[in-house]
Length: 138
Image (cartoon, rainbow, N blue to C red; front, side, top):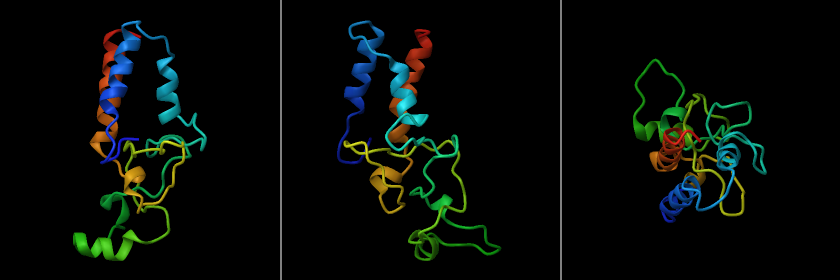
């Protein structure tokens, strides 16, 4: 998980690059499958909208607020919808949430921003690794 307090992206990228350079042997496809395609203890894809079991309570304001005929302020949307214990009215297709904690536990709760927030810090290392895999035709 890429959270605000723990940054493992650099280490993970080094491991991926070492694997590509054949300094380490690993099935890199398994890592992608486990994170995004549901091969994890919850059987969940951490990419929103992918397959049927994906995060439904994403920490994302645009996903939280129902379509209304009147403008909704940020504070108004927070006060009215954030704490509802229901699935989001809007699906943020393709967003990648923070994912499981170090014990492979994931709590699908919009107040759990460390795990449920889709952020560029979550997906940027994955994009870099996948681009490198594509470049090396692995």
